[in-house]
Amino acid sequence: MAYDRYIAICRPLHYGTLMGSRACVKMAAAAWTSGFLYALLHTGNTFSIPLCQGNTVDQFFCEIPQILKLSCSDSYLREFGVLVVSLCLVFGCFIFIVVSYVQIFTAVLRIPSEQGRHKAFSMCLPHLAVVSLFISTSFFVYLKPPFLSWPSLDLVVAVLYSVVPPAVNPLIYSMRNKELKDALKKLIQWVLCQH
Image (cartoon, rainbow, N blue to C red; front, side):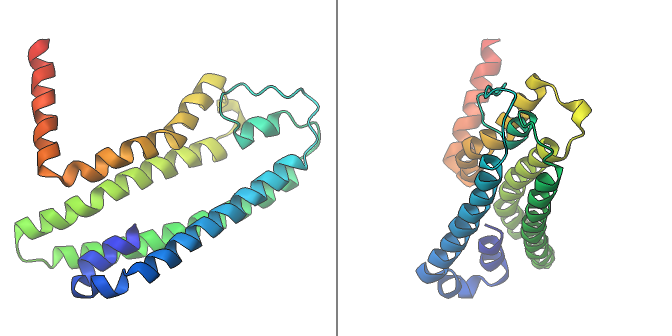
């Protein structure tokens, strides 16, 4: 999404060429392949850990930190290895997003009209909001100290990063649609008038 926004704002005349079907297929294949390999790493690591504290997880999500609590072996080295790979992957994506958005915001601030800047910012901010929500809650789940681990808190945070971003994505990205904005305003006014 960051690359799409970068091309749309910084190189709009080349958008059709740079974001053609071939580029989209390559990006989708890269995302699917890296996601599959990352999931394979987690799956292999999880299945290689002996569980001796039963097989009941305190959540309806089968989160890796919850499974590691059931392990009877010392899995710090495995956790550290997975954490290093995860941080490298996340850091790489984060750097790509930051570099893209620095270039985008630099280009947007050079737009002479206020309306043009507003339109460009409204195109980028939803993506940043969803990514920020996902990254912040993911970091909290995987990097929080053990003394902050309560089953209810773990459940709420797991829902926040695995359910909320995909659920609000269509709403956030369609907020650029004027008809949807008008309908949402009417709904809010109607709800406020009912109370």
